[in-house]
Length: 266
Image (cartoon, rainbow, N blue to C red; front, side):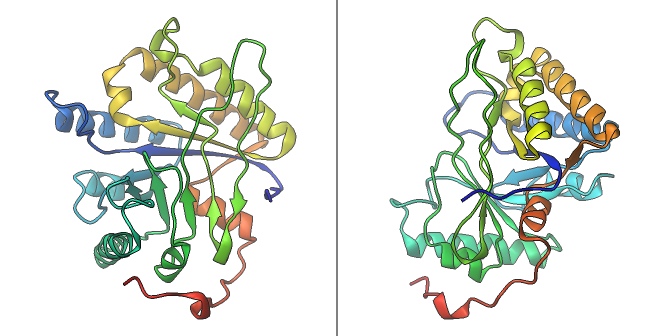
């Protein structure tokens, strides 16, 4: 079941973590430089985003994000080492509790679990227990082509008051013949389609891949954000973090206590 919105919403989530499958590169320095660049870019367009890091309390990017002008959201980035069927309930519960507890103790509002490499999160009752309200599920690319109509993945309620907000598009694009991987025209079409249908358009951005494809991929992102800013000034599009979008979907209703359905992690 999808959720209707009174006004179209654009959401950007950014995966901000190293990739152990790509050794031999100066990833920390590239990621730090890209973080600074993206913070400045979003500040220029007066936009907020959801930044997903493995452990918000100890991430090198946390201080930069908290000091930024925009009201960015910091989310937990979950990978198959502790999320999914192979990881198991006990490991998932332990790792989730550690990341949430340390993050909130550091003054970070933790509301979102963003998945990378894992298709879906199980043990939803544990997410509710730790007051997580959004799961960014796996983002398999939708069919695309020159004449393919824009298709958006709609946010949907899960059990226990959780919302699944999948990405409709990933950046950088995967095109071999378009500069920077492409994606600019498709994003514009999807944004305008979201406005026409009063729905949400969510882009998932891999900061490390963006750094590897700079500056062409950076230019494509800048053009997309410029289009978003134009539609926002026209009053036809709102910009929200994943947590803010979940609040809009819920209608800002107070959460109903769900302790009766919780199960122990062990």
